[in-house]
Image (cartoon, rainbow, N blue to C red; front, top):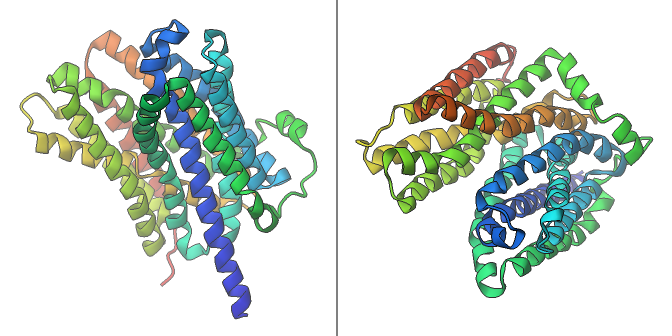
Length: 407
């Protein structure tokens, strides 16, 4: 009995570590290209601000591949799907490093295809090996891979460019993806036990929108998926617009504005673990998510209210409030999806929900820019986001009322 328990613990630890590593590397690969963009853009003959169009293609492909990720994980296993995703990220970086403008769209699509599957694949395996009392914490730690990967890219890519140029930086980053894909191969024997589902890639493509339909038809899953549309929009707009807002409208220097953004991002990464611990300790993950929705509303309303008279401490506090909520929600959300999924279908459900999650990242930032063009008001935009977050908090209360924490 003790030996079996120890083996189960080892499997859990290795699975959690591997899925965290994959999340970090995938996020690193995705963020590497925007970091390289200011230096690489002249070689492509495009403006450095055109990176937004590149990322749009990334998210279009990610929306589709996330839906397929759960189906493929059920057929081939989570580790194999994560390996495939890392290979696609490596291919995207190699294509980008070729320096041809004609290859930018293929590179973006390859990156998006690699971006979508890791989360549903990791949900497939973690939902099986994670002790229920540690579910939200484990998923939250895994989701810290996103900001950790982003920060790693921000630190490592400039150093690699300084040492050998942006093309070598792209190729070295791709080689790191390949290396991790090889390193996790030994885990397939213990983690990829679900590879008995009929069909393969062709079947996954034929049934691409089946996970989306399943999510939409189930009221509780649909509610969570629609909430994730708003929550991810809150997260992405914070990173995309805060620095421009502070520099253009509040006349802060770029270094100070970047520091305010860093405070929000770092606090969000730490908060993912804290909120996971809260959800596990209270056994109220839906209530935790509802509270985060209300917190996002307060954070966004605070950003709407700031002006040039605010001190740095006030701006930092506003970023802290926004970051801990709008960046800190992911782990609790994906753990709750996995908890509500029927046995063996966590990856399928997560992939379907991510269709809505990535759609928020794709659609809301351009809408934010359109609203700026029409009304020239960041305050209005952040106020509207506050209203949307408040509505999400209210929408989650029915799920929270059905929770029955154990004594």
